[in-house]
Figure 1 (cartoon, rainbow over the protein chains, first blue to last red):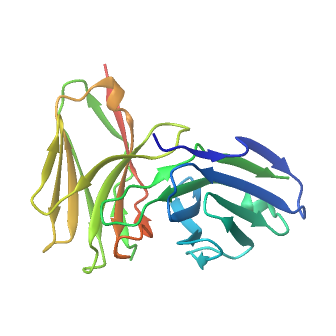
Figure 2: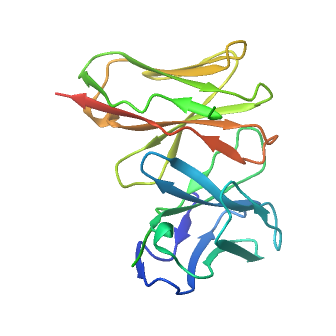
Length: 113
Length: 111
């Protein structure tokens, strides 16, 4: 079974801190994604990656960056955390293909105070 | 106009009822369609893909209408365990899974 592991379930950080969210998948998937989910707004794509060292902006990349140095690991970085980045962050991975589903990690609830 | 639109609900239905959700999408070039299920405080999980010919998985039936640009999910004989949020998902990236999520429809099945 595919496993996508996010490093923290809950995280509390202060405004201005640099924050790292880590995601690891164990099924050799090419594609990896970072979403945030907020009430009333649904899931929104922050960044995605189709291959090692490759990254593409999603719909809301401002204030975020990513790193993919190894195929199995995709990191989301908040360069200077702000209160409006308080959210649930979900990592996902998939194989390339028309019917390939997204496999999600169980999420990181980030609170920025 | 949102790319993928769903009625957020909630839909409150009694056990055993049949309930249907619709979802409309704006990009006529969209190629793949899915329904995901998300339980409270959990991650989304694939419920089923949606094919042009329609498809069924037990009590669940999904339909695609390309002409009117909507997909639907029908749940028959609702169970308490069906209570969840159902997310409509549309892929127009040619299989790279850069998908667009609807906001989700919340279903509450009542005893």
